[in-house]
Length: 219
Image 1 (cartoon, helix red, strand yellow):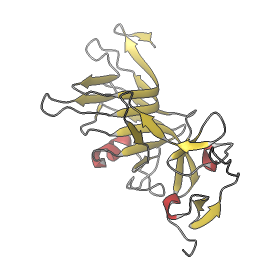
Image 2 (tube, one colour; image 1 turned 90 degrees about the vertical axis):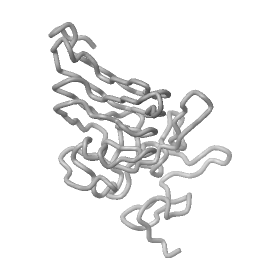
Image 3 (tube, rainbow, N blue to C red; image 1 turned 60 degrees about the vertical axis):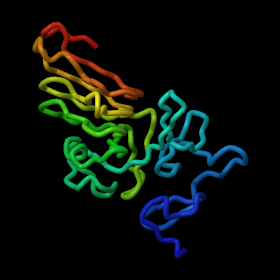
């Protein structure tokens, strides 16, 4: 009511949270459509600026009639030292964010960042999403740019493993807007994402590269 805010959700739909104050969106609303946008930061967190120039809900379609809203809960930025629990305190490593993530959490990775890991990262909870391409629009606002990515590269083995069981599968995990590289050229570790009993795994905007043939590059 007093116009102050911590996040976009504290503001009326016509405003965004900028530096703790609800501020008007930069472009108008088109009746019957949505708010106009020229770039990701013109939209509220949890929305994307689509190719038609409108802010649309950042929903993920799993192809079976179900959708999921992509609202970040964990934040990762190269070189950061925070807890990862908010845009203003991002974690410096993806492994830290994954360890803290619960079922249903979305881990946001900043656009253009690169992260190196020494071994594959295990995704052990259902409905976890990891998405790159987030723009830092304000200290408290990250908005996904579908045209941008983040990079994760592994020197030993692949990048991600998902290992469910018959009684406890790892369901509906999503990996979005990521470049994934495995530089391990040994003959026993030729994978990028190893998913077993992980139904409804959703990959979108993913590029993978691995060392193939025990030293020969394959992309």
